[in-house]
Length: 446
Image (cartoon, rainbow, N blue to C red; front, side):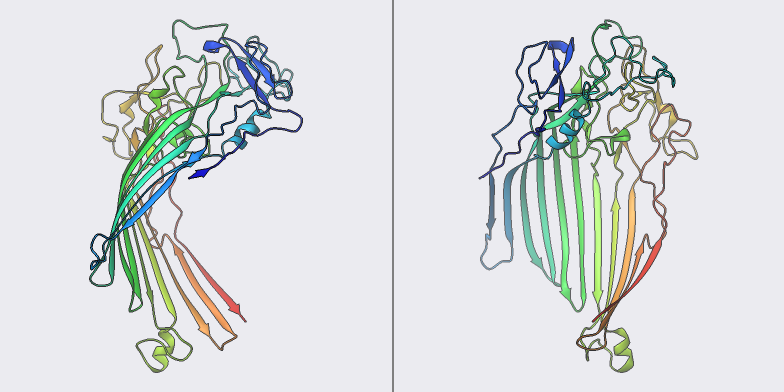
C-alpha cells in the first residue's frame, strides 16, 4: 500500500487568481489567494484556491506462478493505482496570470476591433480573466491490471503474451461556458463568457494485447518481434489528449459544446490499433586477440562489429476534423467540428487522401456532428539501422567507430493530414517525415 500526497501550489504573497462562480455560470468575480473569500457566493477558499486532496491511496499487488514445475511456463499478474500529482503546477502558472494581478484579454478581433490606439480596450460584458478552475478539482488517477504468460521455445526463443488494461478517472476537461453555435436560440446575453473552465470529471479506458517473440543472444544473433493490438477511448486529457487535430502541446481538450461534455468521447489521440516493432542485432566475435569465425587478416577485419536494425510498422493515429471558425465570444478556433454528409471520408479523389465532400459546415444553430478523433490518419513506417565497432589497440587505448542511419530506406511517410474543413488543402498531407540521414562518429578512449 502506497500513500502519496501532492498539495496544490500556494504563492508566498497570495498572487493567484481564480473565479468565484455562481450556479449555472451566470455570474463570475475574481477571487485572490490573498483574500480567499468569494464576493458572489461567500465561499471561503483554501490558500491555494483549490481544495487539497489527502486520500491518495495507491494499492499495488503482483503475483508470479509456475503452474508446472518441469515447464518453463510462468504466469504473472498485477494490479495497481497510480495518481497524477504533477497537475497542480501548470494550473498555478495559469492562475498567476489573471486579472487583477495582470491585464489579460482573449476576444475575437472581428467583434471588437482593436487598434494601436485602443489595443487594451475592454468592451462591456467582456471577461478579462481567461482561465478558471473548479475549486474542487481532483488529481486524476489510473487503475492498471495486467496478465502475462511466458514460455521458452526451441531455438533460443522466448514467447510472452500480455493483456494490459487501464482505466483513467478524473481526467482533465476544459470548456468555454456560455458559448453557442451561430444563430442559436435561448442565449444569455448578460452571462459572462470568453474564459476557459477546467474540471476533473473525465475518464478514459484502454485495452491492449501484446505478443512478444524474443531470440536470446546465440551465435552473435539476438532479435525481438513485438506486436500490439489495442484500443483507447477517452473524453478527457488523461493520457495526453489535446491540441488541434486531436494531438498537440495543449494540456487539455477544449470541448465543442460546454453543455455536452460526453460528446467529446472518442478515440484517444494516441490510439494506434496495430503496432509492430522488429529489432535485430548481430555481433561478430570479440576479444583482443581472437575473434570471429575467420582467421588471419579476415578475422581481424570482421571481429568486434555490431549491426542493429529497427523496423516499426503501425496503423494511423486518429485525427479530429475541424471547422475553421472562431467560437463566438472567444478567440478559440480549434474546438468547432464540421458535419458529416454521409459520404465516405476515405473515398478521396485523385491527389487527395480524404474526401472534401464528406464534410460540410454545421447546420445553423447547431454544433457539428463529426466526432472527435473520428478520422484514421496515415499509416506509419520507419526503418533505422546502425553499425559499430571497437578497435582495441591495447588494454588502455581503444577507438569506437559508429555509423547511424535514420530512415535508411529513404521511404516517405506522412505523419498527418490536413483536416480543416474550410481549408482548400483539406485531405492533403500536412508534412512528410524526415529524409534519410547518416551520421558517423569516432571516439578515442584512453
